[in-house]
Length: 396
Ligand SMILES: Cc1cc2nc3c(=O)[nH]c(=O)nc-3n(C[C@H](O)[C@H](O)[C@H](O)COP(=O)(O)O)c2cc1C
Image 1 (cartoon, rainbow, N blue to C red):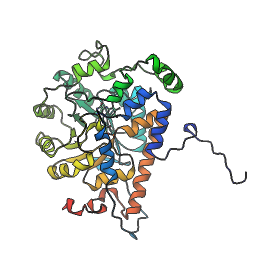
Image 2 (image 1 turned 180 degrees about the vertical axis):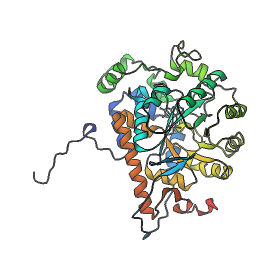
Image 3 (image 1 turned 90 degrees about the vertical axis):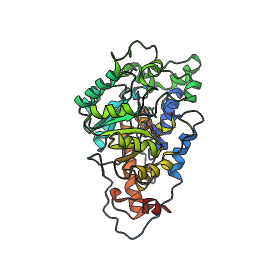
Image 4 (image 1 turned 120 degrees about the horizontal axis):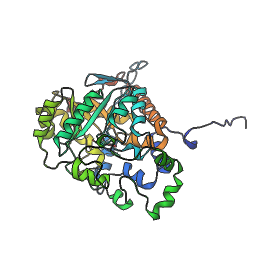
């Protein structure tokens, strides 16, 4: 056994080197219903796949012998410097995945040196997340039916020290998540008799569910009928989303909030123009991770058109299907100011709690660093279309 070393490993013997490793581990540790809630998209999941392929289909154009001994993956967005070029996108009710939920995300983001965007629909309250956060927090807002609720949340975001407001505009209705329908996924989760075996095997998750906080929208307790709704789903449909909303609402919000304003859910150059006209500091290209309108293009296809339309008047963010450091570099190459992601941190949380998120950020950071070296580039901030084959023209 001279050449055989037994290595004590965390994470139940699994080594984690990729997002897929985290996803596999989460699939083992979470009940099917919870895993699918995170993993799944809307309808036929065409857009979910298109997001992935819109990055995977881009090809690099590397240069060699460029002295890449010193590299820098850090960057700045909306005046904030981050050490790991990947921002944790807002995801509601992370507490269904792990009781530490958004607290774990805030701590891990702070440790790694990036930003965490707290969802309106978070499972821990904004104030309790701000209490444990060591890095910058942003707050994500939906355009609620009741503008008083919005005003109240904006005040709380300010009082909690959130340094930017992200308004999500792609939910006039909740998308049709077919896996959730098939699995009988409800919020809070209820275990169907037929699924009891699957759930009981996930001992660690069950323990978290029993000992953890109540699964609820912690920011909305006592607000707008949040307590009286029988299920969270009913509450979301009834109160959270407002199909009557128009760009005027964004304009009004702009007058309430002095800090940086980000408009999330942009999938067309025309809407990017509207967002800039309403005073957005950043336009956030996203199709909600393929969870809303299915059949819309992959984000990487739309990003260059939005970058052109914005023409430097605002920063441009992107999320959807970013699963590797190379995807982050490609997003920069297409003109994005910064890359964000939801499932990477939520899956990591399901796989291994806070440590899982630490590991995800470590892997992404190392991936970007190696990709830069192999491309013959030193600084992520300097990456442009010239790192992609055939994309030089796009940047002209
Ligand atoms: C479980 C889950 C919950 C989400 N909840 C929210 C939310 O509350 N608000 C929001 O603006 N976006 C929400 N999103 C969308 C993410 O912010 C982000 O746009 C999406 O996850 C990006 O795609 P990716 O998961 O492929 O990175 C959620 C996504 C997931 C997977």
